[in-house]
Image (cartoon, rainbow, N blue to C red; front, side):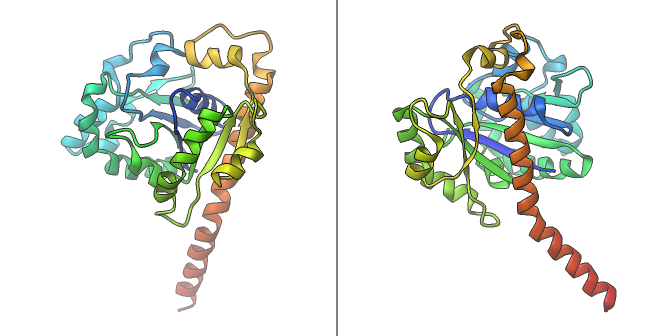
Amino acid sequence: MAVIALTSASGAPGVTATALGLTLVWPRPALLVEADPSHGSSVLAGYLRGAVPPGGASLLGLVKAHRVGRLAQAIDEQTVSLDDERRHRLIPALPAPEQAPVLDSVWDALAEVFTDLDDQGVDVIVDAGRLGTAHGPGQLLRAADVCALVTRTQLPAVAAAHARVRSLAELTNSVGGRSAHLIVIGDGRPYTGAEIAEVTGLPVLAPIAWDPVGADVLSFGAMRPRRWEQSRFVRDLVGAADVIARRVEERRAPVAAGVATARGRWARA
């Protein structure tokens, strides 16, 4: 169905936990890509409790595969399962941030490969890290069907989001007239999503409840509290996934209609 990219304007607003949470509740097979070049895998160290991926799976493996012309074939080899059924998988970040410059050679090709996974029934969720990071995945943001800026609601976070609006707009408006959205962590603590939307000019895609205990399950691999799956935090993640799916359908509907019209014309010719 889609490529969805999440990014941030400041440090640690909850991008990785949100991206991981969306992946785990996603209704179709989903691939989470840790595309933040500034550090190693937070998911391996946190949610997967220090797991070591078989064969050292990571973005670095995809860089090496690209060099020998087998990038698409290497996707499965560089994934780690997030569940027993392998419906939800992870491509871990680079092992070390010093390796980040090698990513510049592969982002464009990865954007094409991830887009093509749609034909295989796999959706891609990108943890793009902080916007504007050196060697960052700007090409994945451009290719995404939905791009969301994740922010908390305290004034420093809102100010950082406002400062990044123009650079984010330049990325997301470059293809198909798309606009970026907000995912607001902790609506009303103290500012509301509506207030942040007014300041930034970005519409709110979805709110995610402020739930440090629930978020620790995703961030640090903490034990799940009782009824975690029924918590407001998880219900908000499910709601966000539904909203994102609708946004993708809305964006693609005119394209699909245009293709159908063109086919009809060819059939009558």
